[in-house]
Amino acid sequence: MLTLPIINTILTHSPDCLTEDQVTLLSKKLVDWLRYASIVQGGGASSGGFFTGPRSRQPVPIAELDGTVSGDFFTVLCVGQGFTEDQWMNVYSFSMLRHWLLTYHSVSSDDRSEVDGSVVSMVSATSSSSRLLPPKERLREKAFQYCQRLIEQSDRKAHKRTDTELQKACLVEAVCILDCVCVEDASLVYRTFPCIKALFGRLSSDLSFARVLIPIAQFYLNHGEMAAVDCDGVWMLVFGRYPGELFNDPFLAHEFLRFLRLNLDSVQLRVPQYIRSFPNLLKFLAWDSPAVVDDFVDLLPSLVTPGTAVELLHSLLDLPCLTATLVLQLRSVSLPIAEPSGRGVRLQDAFRNPSLRGLFLFLLRGEAGSGDTIDRLSTLHELLAEAADWPRVVHCAQVVPVLFSFLIKMHSVNPKSRSAAVFHPRSRGSLFFPSLFVCRVFSCHLLRLCKRRPSLVVDQSHELLEFAGATANVYSKEEIFTHVVWVLGEYLSVSCDSRCSVSLITSCFEALEAVLFEITSSAPSPGNICPAPKVITTLMSALAKLASRSHDLIPRVSLFLSKLRTAARSGSVAWCADEEDLVSVVTRGEELWSLLKAPGVAQSVLTPPAHINAPQWHRDTNVASPLQLRALTSLTHSQ
Image (cartoon, rainbow, N blue to C red; front, side, top):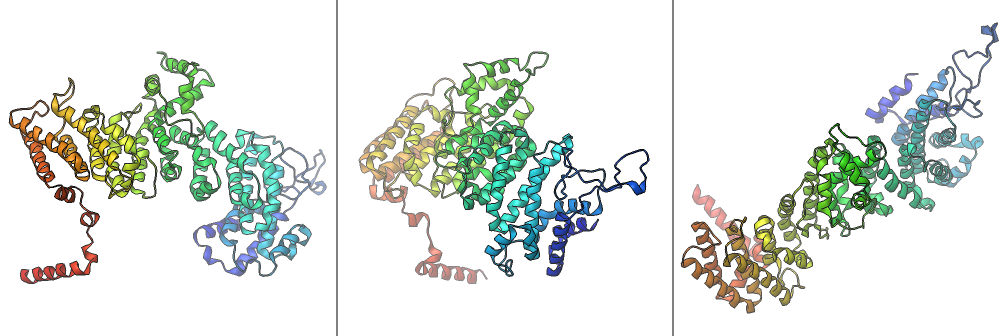
């Protein structure tokens, strides 16, 4: 009886140690144990009676979980007062069957050398002819019959709760084994699908069988296209109702996210609901962030498309709000949970308030496409401020910065990403993350992304100019403002994108000119400090670069720079408190002014050609040879 546990250990640690003959022999034994175990109870079952003795005891047939006498072969879902040794071997065989099939029954060219595939399909249809099959094919056939019997037995009403849980566990294993044998033998797909389809129809309305739906979804994913069946009902349930209602089930979350990670390419290709369902998937992350954050690091790149990127970024920022809303949703189905001080009652009332219901329903939406965010975001944050110290909310807030930075970095380093999400440095924050945090993350990756794909500056010129043209951003978002101005001056050029027109350059020039004039013509408003010298010099450099590409703008820049120099020489200025900073700004202005006196030189210096910016001297033999000679000479002289 200890043989199979030992064999299972061998499968795990050293599967190659079994020879082909041993594998064939064990396949035959597994067939016997699975299909031909005793159908009477073991352990000396008695038919009852006061004068019953050892000789008068009659064999008692095994029973089903609902108490009826079993009319078919023994399985793990049969019950009795005791079990015979071959019945225990049946149970052990089933427990290791999938592992055995995955290890030794993978599809190979000689797998059907004895019997043609079409003949196998016909012969397998009748159990009386199954003995004609090779050992591996016969084991598949018996595994198929065993699993079908288990599915039939799972429909019986069990008397004990533990037996009900056993039915669910056996259903999961049975569907996984059926999927395994269908992968190995495609001829079984058409015989299996009616059973799987009927099982899905029976379980789809019962949330307690959610565990079974994951292997059923795996079966549809692997074989639905071959069998030409409609899978939309399965995907709507798996990506819709289950995450939406069972987000607080840790086992389901683990199994579901594991299913997605293992089948990510197939899911993206065959499940159109996958990307649209990311608001539902994020509920797993919102509810138990530390446990599933690694899964979402793998899944997030697949959820990003040009149509979902911005909404996904907003959803990540509002993830702690979603956590608080999920807690409120669970509390609302029972009595409100509140501390003696009455804490939590106001939030519960707000959740049930019809006028505020729309705010919470947006967070609880099941599909993308309802909008990137909501207008009354500040109202929602005020309502949920009370939940800021809830443990689940705090844990979620600790995970969000990591994923948010990862998502922005992914856009920056992925040359195929055509999403404009990184170009939304809008004035928004979150319950935990102020707009300063958002801008800092954006600014860290903006330069890298624009360097990889300069044409994105033209694509998103409207958003960038809208941000750079707001003078308030000079004081409140200094870091990202500086970077946005720099990329506008650096990449708004015909050499980077042929679509860059003179009118676009002029529009950008006028927007930046207005900001620079405003911050250097008067003192900052009360509550604001003087603009950083880096911001002013970056604005001047950007204007000079734009003017070098459209020479009609050079007189305007030159005039401004000359006035700036005159104002600085006349004494202190209100927009710069430090004398050394003022000297640096004026020096930079004089350098730009001198360059613009020679437009041809200015364009070469401020907008150098690509071969100057990225030289490839090591690939040019005419240039590389003198360098090598000079290197050798210096080495020789140094000795």
